[in-house]
Image 1 (cartoon, rainbow, N blue to C red):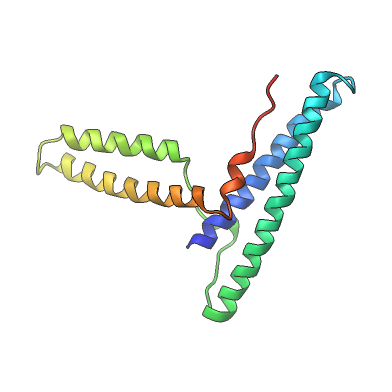
Image 2: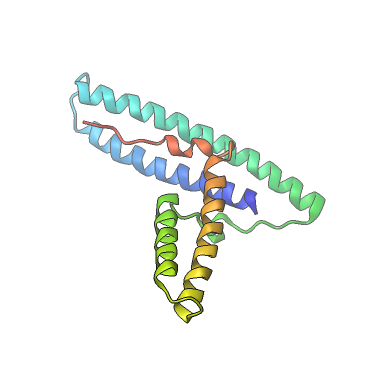
Amino acid sequence: MEVEQDLRAASDTVMNTLERLHELESEKRGLAPGTPRFRKIAREVERLSASVFAYSHVQHNLAEEVTTLREEAGVVVPPIDEIEPVRDISVILSDWRDAERQMAEATPGSAERVSAEADARRLRAEYRKAYEALTNPRTRRRRGTSLVED
């Protein structure tokens, strides 16, 4: 269900951003205020903090959507910890390419070929799902968390 993946993605983004905020804030504590690095980290902390706020808003909207689904259709969404995360799209693509390569190298009709074909179909579907999750307007901004460069 799309709303489940959206909830998981938003929650993962908040948790990852909070971890990065902790790292940056810890580093900033050891720097002299006013230095270029201190100021750069302070800007990044401000940007990431705004991102956490935005994703908490996304989660609130999703919670309202889930409430409506439950009340109107009896849909029960599991806790976020029980929702399987979408794998990184580049990893899925790499696995899919490997399966296609194995399929091309296997003898037609062999068990290896049948297995590779099944893997390629499964990975194609997983890639499509991950791509849709990545381009979904509700969660698209999750890609906006970057690291501070020295």
